Length: 418
Image (cartoon, rainbow, N blue to C red; front, side):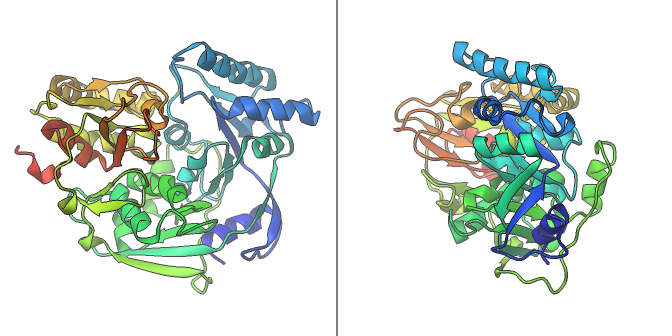
């Protein structure tokens, strides 16, 4: 069996599962946020049960519009807060919170071998720690909160093998953008993506989270990495409970095996209006920008901020550009503060926000006006995603976003003179 199949088999009490098989699987974590949880809570109350199946396994994070930007978002957060108090389940309040998909791994609430479901499409992020994690609709989440189980079809697995050594400035973001550009936004439709190879072994945990996060942008059900020494080191002082490590069998059957030479991958830029509309940085051309956003559940971790700080050090943000930097969690913010990154950002002329999804989904903290162009480390660049339907969002890694903020155009980090 593949890694995904091993985990799912263990959670439905079977020795073996196969792609296309329908199963009822027990879940280890049920997640929702300030946009999706109110719907799930409303549907949960219709079921007629009084209590969630396990308060320690139900997590709610207010991160999209927090601190609240208006009355409606305040009401949404209040619903989560009151339900969590009533149920005794886990809730992250302002001051302790962060972007859910950065926060949960950081806090050790998701571990290898888990089955995790969340009312957010980027729940697949947790595949980076060797878990089966997937997004579901709010009504499915209501059912999972009540029963502790999900009903699903076992997905086929596509294996992605990355050979060679990545060049300077090439990160997990570039691996996944290059991959999505190659296979398309439906290239892994309802499949598990299993990421392997020598270049993956060298990839940091932050880079792996980025890749798993964007598996959904290829239509995937999940994006998984095997647990190795880097995973174990990351979990050592974090994991809140024991866990089981699963490995794909050597003779596992894959729907497809796709191989790449990492040494030939350049920093990538996804042009409007799809994550698959990618070009290597050398072929981008002269595109002036109005805004640069560095953060999100895709690239709001400490390594992402370090990369941005290394480029912005002793530089100035272009006079015509707004540079918005958003640490993924309060802990990331603190670590960046101690390392001097926050001072670097502010001295460079960037603004630093409290942890929030903010501009990624057109929420707040960086909405685009008609005709404006933004380079962003977020995961989606659909029409109107960050504001006006007549604005444009280009996706990149933090190095490209930082270099672009300095030069006022989409730029190669190599263009910045130290």
